[in-house]
Image (tube, rainbow, N blue to C red; front, side, top):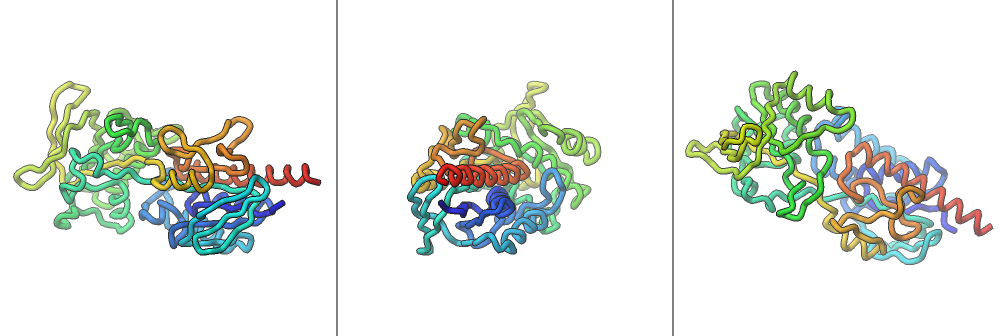
Length: 349
């Protein structure tokens, strides 16, 4: 019986899982396909995280340091799992670097893929240089300067369009991505902090900064930072004769067409299933749910369980998820993996 847990994915969920495994007295092997740990917050250059307000580089950086300095964790970067044999209590993983790992259980923290706005062409991404995504806007915030990519000028007016790649049956994205409303209200405030003279508009179908975030983000962005919220159905983003971007649509509160010029238009992009999930499903022998995320077992008595015994899942691999909840689920999956291993040892003795 193995006393090692294989953790796949070095983002918030995977980092938390690896730390959780060693805290529970087992060894962890962490496999990350990229050359750096930290997942999307680091790879995509996120700014200040919701709800803590800490810079991603600091908050997730601490998690990375904890794992890299933990003698109980063996880290393989720039590596994938190419094959997994065996069963709960005795798995053998073959890595892309030629090494093998013997593990009693597996935690998948394989994350998500950002929606590609090129799949929403009528809203201007890929056509106009000043139409960007929230991840690109976050990179501006991290760099400390908000400017139009086309010519470097400070924008007088910025529009953030919600639900780009979410709640859209026409492009096969029926789900809500959960984080976009809160991230966008936070982004609006970050833009104003750097560029107080810039007006920020948020276009929405519906909006909800869930849980305890209502005061801290939704109301604060309106009352303190003067963000303007427009309930609208957007038709298209085009360019005016003076080079500014025109957001065209219908104000659904007053039932009339609206056309407002902007200097930057930001797509609040949703969370897609990891584009490698078909491969992950094949390699690890786990199921996918109908949207393409990893499927879970019966949740109430098999918390974090996948469709294959001995393999557990955490974070955005299961569906759209916040960073904080991904971290909590990573720790939960680790403890579940360790406790089930201990139960197998007791049964064998």
